[in-house]
Figure 1 (tube, helix red, strand yellow):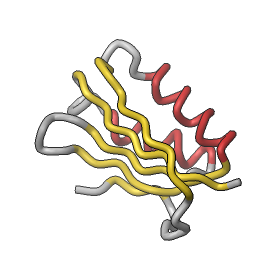
Figure 2 (cartoon, one colour; figure 1 turned 90 degrees about the vertical axis):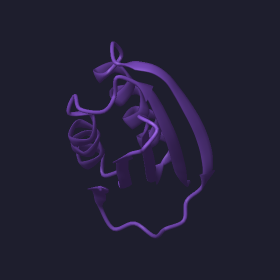
Figure 3 (spheres, helix red, strand yellow; figure 1 turned 120 degrees about the horizontal axis):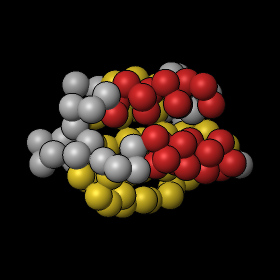
Figure 4 (spheres, helix red, strand yellow; figure 1 turned 135 degrees about the vertical axis):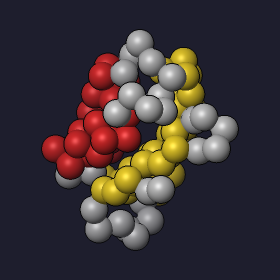
Length: 90
């Protein structure tokens, strides 16, 4: 079943290629949604796919940036179906 994963990363996650790597990981797994920097120095990610793909996506992002991530807030929701690809939002 498709779900939506909303993530809020804090730590040293802006300016280390985080958004571009998240986009690459999402595209490899056919995850849809977006990633963007927030004004409060966090990064927000909204991702939609089958739950097992989202689990894999989350694990890979967390592993790739484990030394930069101080905290991640995770919210699971039903998929909205509004996304066609995965983008970096400015």
